Image (cartoon, rainbow, N blue to C red; front, side, top):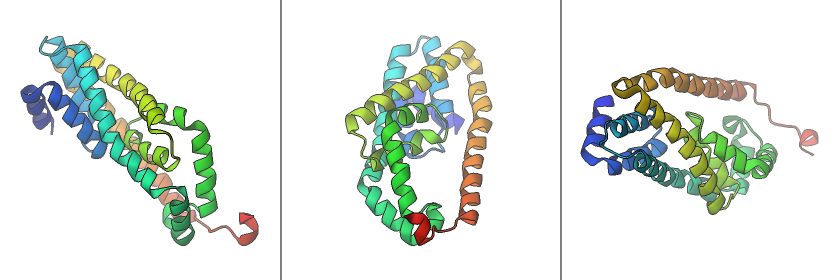
Length: 204
């Protein structure tokens, strides 16, 4: 994957950065931990401008986040809650719990989206609850852009400073990302096993 990413970036420049970052948000296995550090390395060599790679990377990320946001928006809280009441074990929540979680997210959506966009593996997922909570598209894009820009600056700066050793960024972040995914899956499986549908008295 490293060779494919570097070849595409070398051939397409800013467009390649934007397309790869869009794909990274749609298909998380394509890692920004490889894309932006190489872009920073290219900027260090004078082939691309640092500001240009940040703009391209951020625009690509935002475009990639939109389909997940609109998927959450189309699903909606009521539909998700009704699904949870029928198949709560697989969501690990009852319909009432879905509504309470959505209410919590609605009150904190700006912070959740901002910080979610700088956490590996959560970066894509955070768009879905934002859509379900019907966060306005303007607020979603603003806070997504702020968080995404911060993440891209960090990765591109590391690539810029490390030079030809930029792949070390991915070597460091890859186990971190995998650990987060494993922890999320472990928590999910634990909740599936331990799930107990609230009784009528508990739901009141």
